Structure formats: structure tokens, C-alpha cells
Length: 347
Ligand code: PHE
Image (cartoon, rainbow, N blue to C red; front, side, top):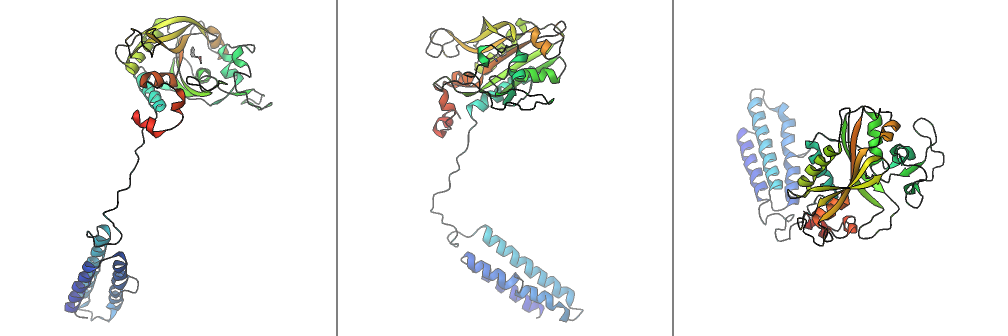
């Protein structure tokens, strides 16, 4: 084949490719020209019979042809001309991609981590399956306390599970995120400053405001410098404003928890009526959101810290509760049904 014939062959092949109407024809042309037994590979194989002095120019021309054919084929399959290819029907409706939205519970957790992150808190984690020591004993909750009852707590039927040190221990689904406090204190030295979001479990009958499986976020700050109830109030006030809006204030009411002394219940002023009284706050102007208090010295003893030199506060609130008041969700069950019509409204 002369160089001129090569040029003609190239032009003819490109014209054929340009005229191809469907994917099958394009594939046939690919096989014909650049397939394993195609005409261009045959030319390359036949190079040895070309006179030596013509070989470089010949080789160059064949390679150029091959490149031109490949480019033309690639252009064809990437962007078939309108109406030219049977693989594309431009009249069909497009495929709809349903974009997901972040779940309200995830949003509250992330937002909380961000807000407390500004105050130097990091996020700590613990397992859903806990032992009696972390969930109750070290939190100063004695065996006769009603929360340890089988009717309140999901105990696991594992009579002689071997604990980390080889001793049998009682296992349960944690009833609160407070055991992560114990884990954090046992694994660290003061100061510690953590929040611990996670799932919690109680034998509650499901209704509009209760679920047997819900979420809490625990907070813990302990230091060898004196820590006071006023410090607790100031961080919760900051949190309230960041989470619910600038107008929201906090109030403490005396309460009891086995692991804090003194203990308080924490209310946010109603972000909807600004404290005047409405349906959301049941006309009281306040919404109960958290339990909190100063860490009981007995808890420090249980984790091996010296109550004489360490002080701290802890708080815990329900993630569902915050999500429900923040987004105006009247029924806790809506948070678990994964109905996209509901979730999309909160996007
Ligand atoms: N763990 C408590 C509860 O579930 C809340 C709490 C946490 C109270 C930390 C005080 C301190 O009710």
C-alpha cells in the first residue's frame, strides 16, 4: 500500500464511522478497523515487508490512521448525534434521584457536638451493651434502686459472661449515657471535658412521648480547679441560645439523681411563645430538657479519683426531646418511621 492509498483508506474509514447510525454499526466498524484482526493491525503486522527506507513514513501514517479511527469511535459512543442512535430516547422522562436529608436526630447530635466543640468539649463514645458497674454501681445507684428493676431495664440473659478482668458481670442495654462518664473518668485523668451522644434503652411502652429506644447526650466536665454549679449554668445557657435561639434562657429546679449532688432539672424558656405560655410549653413558659448536677464525690471514689481534689458537673438530655421542641414534632414515633414525606419537611 502506498502512502496515498493509506490516506484514502483513512478518509474512507472516517467517513464510514461518521455515517454510522447505531451502536451495532459503530461496533462493526471498530472490529473492521482496529479490532484484533482488523485492517489497521494487519498493516502494522505487514510493516516488515515495506522497504526499509519507506518504513518510518509508512509507520507514522498507519499510527495516525489508527489514532484518527479511535478518536472518531470514542466521539461516536460518548455523544451520539441527536436522533442518530437507538440507545438514546430523548423523549423519555429523566430518572429522578431522590436526594436524602439529614435525619433530625443526627442534626441535633451534630449541632450539639459543634456547640460544645466551641467550649472545648470533645465527643466520647461507649457501647450500647453495658455492665451493671458502669450503668448503675459506679453511678452510685444501689441494687434496690427501682431503675435496676427488670421491669425498667433490659437485662441480658447471660448469667456468667466473663468481664474484662475475667470476672462474671451482669450485662444490660444501657438505660442512660451516664456510663460513658464512668468509662471516660476511668480511662483519663482530670481535667476531662466530653459530650457523649448515644442510644439508650428502657422498658417503656411506646406512645407519643416515649420510646423503648431513644437517644441521650451526656456532658461531663471535671477539673482539679474548682468547678461550680454556676459554670454548669453558663454552658447550658450558651447551649440553649445556640440550639434554640437568642431569646432562650435556662432555669434550674432542684431534683435528685443518685450520681449528682446537688442535682437539678434544667428548663429552657419556651422558644415559641418567648415564655408567655403556649401549647408547646403547656402554658408554663418553660420546657424541661435535661437533668444535671455536680458529680457526687462517691462517683469519683468509684472511678479512683480523689474527691478532695477533683470537682465537676454532669448533664444529660434527650435528643428526641430537643428535636421535637426545636422542629415542632408532636409525636416521637415520627422520628423512627423514616417516612420521607415527613423527613423532607425538615430539610
Ligand atoms: N442520666 C440521667 C437520666 O437519664 C440524666 C443526667 C445526666 C442527670 C447527668 C444528671 C447528670 O435521667
